[in-house]
Image (cartoon, rainbow, N blue to C red; front, side, top):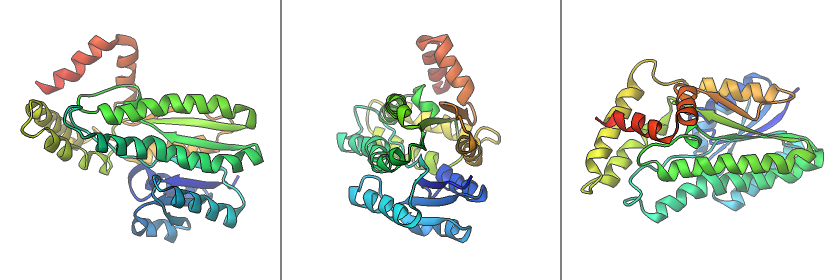
Length: 273
């Protein structure tokens, strides 16, 4: 079945890989992101590109209105747009923390709220929320990012129950370590935020060990791994509630769930020695 699909954050990483996969699957795909110039390749492959910042309510409404006008429906929404603010809680400004929630939670909620009336009218649809293994585990200096992903897990669970009577599925994707811009733009600001503070030594160690692991062959998964999982969820008549994929996601989430907090804490902190 050919679905009309909107993918947010489609200018790079998981979002772009997902849009490309869904276009290849034969769907009508709209990619939305702030950097429309980064989505020209999607258009060349048969997709559509819309410039949209999820924190701009007017742009969110205009995006959905355009798709409804052109296609008459939206069958699937892939909420992928997001980023990470890393740094000590004491050092990260509340403005930066609020911006993190504005994009990762409230922006996601805004586009979802705009799409839902159209799905309810059709009594069908899928909301696919790209969370993270970070929605189930935690790391030092990731309080604000993990806070958004933990919130997204609970928010999605509540939404799933609310939408069940209307035939709308809510699916949560929990990626592990994925080779995207995510890591490149995260660690330098983290070190900078901790500079000349009691946390500077820890921040340097975290950045060093994380970059070493991230750049080591085989220690991260390509974004296509997540794109294939999302494609599977779109195709499924009865999709899973959660899909876990990508390097280290399953073992770290297993360790966190079954070994308890203290063992998980020791495992995380052992990487800083």
